[in-house]
Length: 138
Image 1 (cartoon, helix red, strand yellow):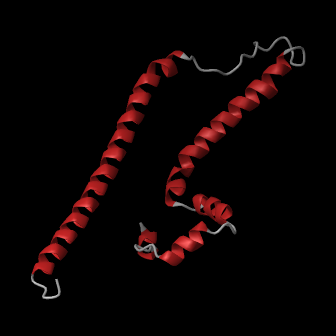
Image 2: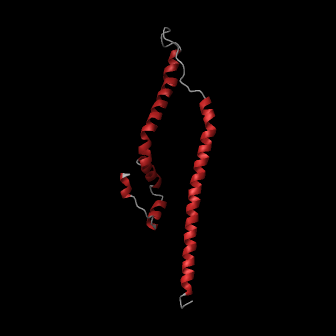
Image 3: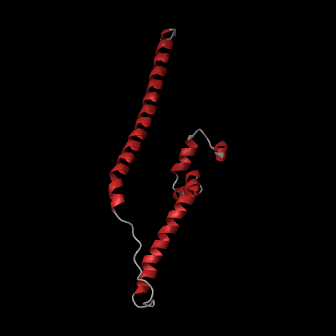
C-alpha cells in the first residue's frame, strides 16, 4: 500500500513503446516480479512449502537409502515420507470448480467493463449527433 503513491494511472504512448521494446524487457519483468507486492506477501508461505519439500526430498533421497546396511541394525527401519493420494483426489473437483468460478467472475467483470466502455462511446456519439443539430455548418 505504501508504494501506491508512486504508481502512475495513465499509460502513455511512450510507455507503450518502452514496454514493447525488446531490450531487457524480459529481464525487467523478472526483476519486477521479484520485488512485487504479491510476491513479498507470499514469500513466507512459499518459503515454508519450499523448506518442507526440501526436507522431504533430503529424507527420501539422502537418509532412507542409508538404511540398506550403513546404519546399525538396532535402529528401527526408515520409511519414505509420503502423503496419501486420497485427500488430493477428493479435493480436485472442488478446486477445479473454484478455478472455473473465479475465471467466470473475472470474465464477467471484464465484459461489464467492456460494455460500459461501449455505452460511453455510444453516449458520446449521441451527444455529438445532438450537438450537430444546432450547428449551422451541417
